[in-house]
Amino acid sequence: MGSEGDRLESESRRSSVTLKDVAARARVSKSTASRVLNNKLGEGFSVSDTLRRRVIRAARELNYRPNLIARSLTNTETGMISVFGGANALSRFGNIYQTAISSLTESLRAAPEKYDVILNVSVQQPEASELPSWSISGAVVLGRCSSVTMGQMEMAGIPYVVINGLCGARGCSVVPDDIDGMRQAVGYLIELGHRRIAYAGPLPGYPEGHGSSLEDRRRAYLSELASRGLSAIDGHEETLESAAGFLQSAVLERGATAIVACGHMEGLNLMQAAQNLGISVPEQLSLICFCDEYACNVMSPGLTFVDLRSEQMGRLAAKLLLRQMRSAGEPRPEVIRLSERLVIRESAGRCR
Image 1 (cartoon, rainbow, N blue to C red):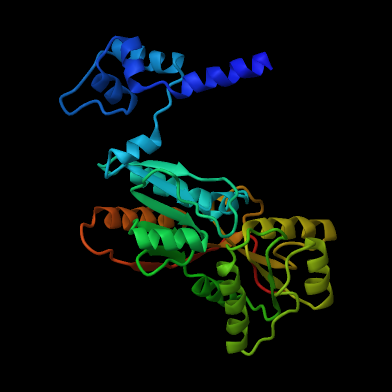
Image 2 (cartoon, rainbow, N blue to C red):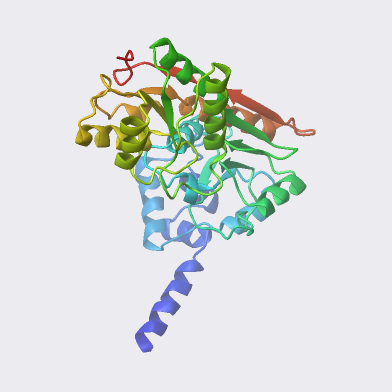
């Protein structure tokens, strides 16, 4: 009990350390300590490297942590941007959000205002607020956030942008044009002579609330085939429980010569299963997937894919958010539908 009490007391002392304590330990003024720790040097203010290291060492020795709530109360413009939806959006390897958020952060870092981006990856209750206790200058939503969070941002007038999802009346969003992307994929396969084209849905466990793109792709698959007088292959409405089972049903039993997969992980699973079943790609089966370009670079043979242009998505989201935060008047809502492009590689060939 004594040791636990000592630990709690020690943690309490650390949490109460202030900027004034750090300045005293480093033997500098409070304003100098603040500028060093917040990287606000320049603009006529400079310190020696020795002094800078002394301030940082003092902060580490005292385990100094800036009080974000106090900082927000004393600053109308906090310079902090919160990113919501990370727990679900970033759960799949190599998805578009990882590239998009990297591109967005890079763009915001280059802005003269020097914003700090805070990524929230905690698991939230469906109807809980995701807003932090401190004030924020803006927000980024990956796919979707809770209805409570959206309502609070709209009511409080917090500038925000949604990547690959719907925004409210006062926000902005950047979404990929998955409908046109599917048209490009199906059109290309038809040019290659394919008439039996299947669609492979997502793997089980796809993050809830991030499936609007998937439904757009599936519906576009159905409408594009119908407009060309072709029939869909059964299984397009199901999750990809087994890549081998899907190939058995769609290719070996129903005669599909081409598959459009909803994502790169699904495409990779299908390619591996095809190899195990002795189905050669692209000689017997052509394969196209929707993907972030960087994820497709690790696959062999090279997967033909519909590039979602996630890097550009992040840059556009940053541009919209900066415009919203810099606007002194009413918000200027905008939805940008980003065109996709078909990147042709080795996994799709002429129907034989």
